[in-house]
Length: 197
Image (cartoon, helix red, strand yellow):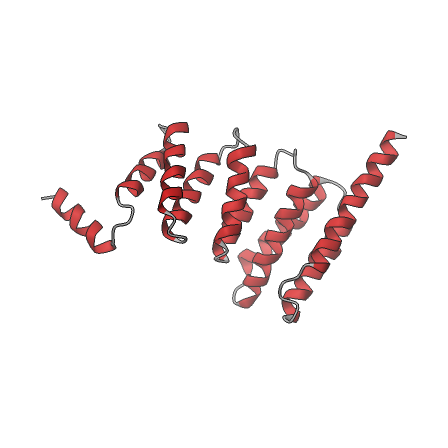
């Protein structure tokens, strides 16, 4: 009886995710993007296991590597949706932090920095043992520093990285970033020239 209810629950989760994708398109006037959202929904309907969704994601990643132009934009958006679906459907799976990391990277590529911050933050808080957690911390600091100009938050993320992973290569990069925070490119160049005299 419990196995039947678990299977039913998984199906209901998939249906809920599909409904969310179909009903929440922010670009309904763009038929290409709507078509891509529908494709995500249709492909997600049959997904019952992490392995089956991983195969779909791998196929989409291969398509992205082999295409150019506007199709890349649609493929990136589609991949972000697939990564998000994976995280929602399988939050405790070993591949979940990697899906979050990839979603963050694709969000940066799409210049959706707030979404990227959200994905990296989830890694920071919920996946402390994940191998790329230092990168997730660094990328949060970098986004705050470079794209959103929230220097206090950038410094906080850089300091968290340095404290948690003092011997990681990105810790020294984070230290340099804090030293140059708020400086123009010209000021940084002058500082390096002065140090090398």
